[in-house]
Length: 478
Ligand code: NAD
Image (cartoon, rainbow, N blue to C red; front, side, top):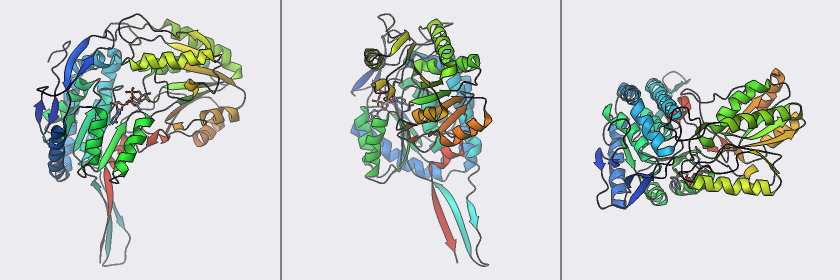
């Protein structure tokens, strides 16, 4: 495979590359052009049973492997990712549409995560309890078992990296089903791990009809943990399937991030950061800033500045130099934008820029700014997952916090204020798994990433990400 071409697609089961053969297929499409990229084989139940049997063997192999071996595999895979950065980034942009710069950054995020996990997997210390002489009690952490991991399309490199990295660091085996829309990026990440020496039974990649694959894998007692990133609706459904067998779960679900902008803020600084964060990956990011809750004193300046910057963004094919926002990833997204934005405007929201598709090829939607959006409209309540900012004016801090906490979602929240006492109040009061104060930098290999309420539970990244693939055992000796 060379940079610029799209690879042949396959699954990886027990170390074997499984081609299309006589299987059903899914056509992978370039969202910038609508043109087909390749045919992806979809697993049948025999494929999934093979993957389960391999994962069962793989767990025994990897659980007993020295932590240094796991560390070496993760660190070597990080090195290979770095070497293959350009090739993998181009594949991700072809499949998902985001700009090449974003895809390159995503590869590097994965590199630093694997490097961090390479260290973290050697720090599984456990705990010794204080007991009378002659007695001993210890708390140990053990890998949970084979993991079924489902990675969505919006971070085609980063999501598979998280789904594979944590179980592998913990000593688990993993069957990953990445999104059928962006399979080659996910395969490229797994291939780096296999080329770095990961035993073939430990990491596998299947694709299929999502509901068939999740039902099959989650019905098997071999799988001991479900790790899912995606919408809240699908997450709730999968949690019910996992509950049948009391499987552990890490659920990274939807969001509707609030941004609280207070009167005391440097408006230009806030605009610079928030416009870039809003339109990254065409807004198809679970932590994308969405509800802008702006205090009256800076409201008009913030709204006009946001509109001006959004309308200047260069939208186009992510492979082209200078493009700042690519297409949406699949035809469902612009359709959703039209539905949600249309309903908001019909209900009285003011449209400042965007609010339309761009061109007739691919799935482009213009960066959109709406203001005075009625609270009851669907867009103020459902995750839009697209390039739209919703701006509304507020008077007091109490009203702003109440609006931030109004929805059942609680993934990320952002706030802009220079008042230190208020920063502390926000840190306590805002219901979210992650809160940014005067920054948008919430990712990092060492920082737990996850939500509360309908945004899910459990963390990825950080020591917490590895611990999420462990179970606790207390051992008492008399
Ligand atoms: P979707 O809910 O149908 O799918 C989301 C992801 O879940 C996809 O990767 C899909 O392959 C997978 N999926 C769907 N049904 C499944 C099943 N029964 N078993 C296993 N996996 C299943 O929606 P979509 O149209 O692909 O994406 C749109 C919505 O998904 C967005 O509105 C957003 O809420 C959510 N989403 C969230 C994230 C995130 O990072 N949290 C990422 C992508 C999509």
